[in-house]
Image 1 (cartoon, protein in one colour):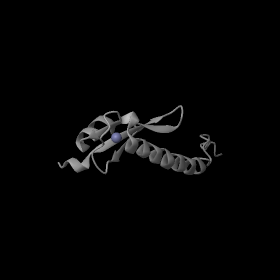
Image 2 (spheres, protein in one colour):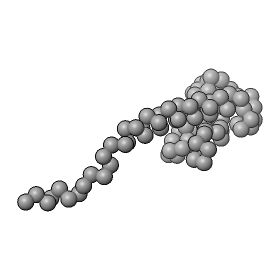
Image 3 (cartoon, rainbow, N blue to C red):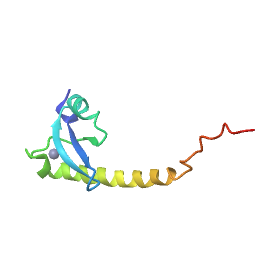
Image 4 (cartoon, rainbow, N blue to C red):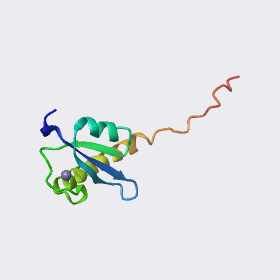
Length: 97
Ligand SMILES: [Zn+2]
């Protein structure tokens, strides 16, 4: 696997509803192995190797986190509308005399 397919991982903070970088320069397989089970984690392609040793201070990681936060805000406001349907469907339909 070539080094150009490195991944960074951003994690959704449920309190702030914003993503923050938690890891980077990960091998793609490793990133999926470690984070695909976490619904709050988002694996992002890196354009290249990140030079910072600290993901939280890494500028490209922060940008990826910002981007993920934006996309999340957009998608969640969309689903909010569609979820406003009749959620309370009555279970008493067997009452047909
Ligand atoms: Zn980074």
